[in-house]
Length: 501
Ligand code: MLC
Ligand code: AMP
Image (cartoon, rainbow, N blue to C red; front, side, top):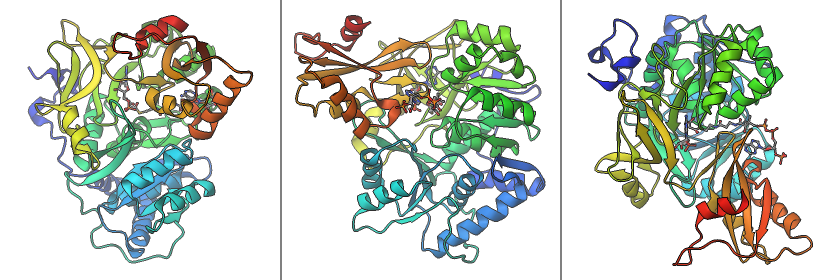
């Protein structure tokens, strides 16, 4: 039996599943808009609801402006802004035009933004912050980059001839991630990658036009963008955007909008649980957790307090969504469930690294053939995560081969933080590690070899504040006489954790 058959709604067989039938994201979305133009589709507090028809017309108009400004399919557009209807319109317009969207964290500082601009050479940037716009223009240097606000207030143009003309192999999103090691690389995701994943979730989670998602996740990472927004549009459903997560705001929006769906990272679920207000989630049809491990005890606490049996699922920038607990059947705490429709999964011999294949798996890193080659083993994408399979095929994520800290659902690459701190004169060497933490899941700690001077800790934190987005900064600096090293002189991270735990 196909392992993912367990995800399908009753009456649907694997042979009936055609994840790429709509060919592209616009292929899927425009069919939804035509079928029910009056459907309330996207909501923010400034504009209220816009309908499917309004989204179609507004994104068409923005696409006309972008084409009139000279943008052609394949050119990159960097988008970095808080969630809003305007942002969604700009994103959908770019996608319909065949542009390649680079979603960038709004917390990035100049150094982090400049790296992306230099690497991806965007022709357009959509930002909600003038300073960020200046950083982008400066990093682009002599290369022309058009910087606009989320309203894309540039002259109108006619409907572009190639609107909605993209196919499944055409690129749609260039998402920056450090992957296993090194500086951030752009993972190039095609329309087929994103569509197949959104379709798989639509089937697996029974996502229907009647669903209403409250979404406080940012739209610059896969969870908010590839799952929350694309999933909503692919299902012809509705989404209520929030500008960040705060317990009272989220619960208020869920109540006010009679939400049926809520997706969060474990830090959000843990804050909801600590609020004592879990009962307010009772009316949801489905709650989902992902992006970092959800502790089994928290999973049970949420069930007890809200009646919601969460679905935990597993995804990645390079692959969108891979594995999920089933809608019907056992939603098993401590596991991420079974491969989603279309996804093949196996564990590597000897290391148990999780390997993936499927229409959701990206084709490679932007202009990094070597990094791409390293991450594919005989055609299988090597995730850097280590897994174990229960007897009946449920996947547990039991470790990581890559050096990665996941804090509040955001990925922090120790190497990047270490490089920034090493600039300080008092630092002989530094190891950045993640320690278990009740709110963040893992907390970033810098362990510094070198004698602390009177202001060393403050100086180090100032370096971090100047060079790193807030979520990457060490929450604590610990000085040690010597970092633990192996016979080759290499710092042993596991021993560093023991040293400071
Ligand atoms: C914010 N801070 C963080 C942080 N988020 N520090 C560490 N880790 C984080 N995740 C900083 C703030 O800037 C602030 O710094 C201080 O910590 C306290 O912030 P806060 O007010 O408590 O944080 P808050 O704004 O409430 O944000 C917490 C959060 C947010 C959990 C809501 O981090 C968040 O939205 N996380 C979700 C990230 C996400 O979308 N991940 C999906 C990746 S996709 P200062 O200096 O100002 O005091 C992916 C694939 C998949 O992984 O499978 O989904
Ligand atoms: P990113 O590269 O930001 O997309 O992060 C992807 C990584 O998040 C994966 O490789 C996993 O290590 C981790 N991840 C995502 N979902 C889960 C989950 N449910 N449990 C444990 N780790 C997860």
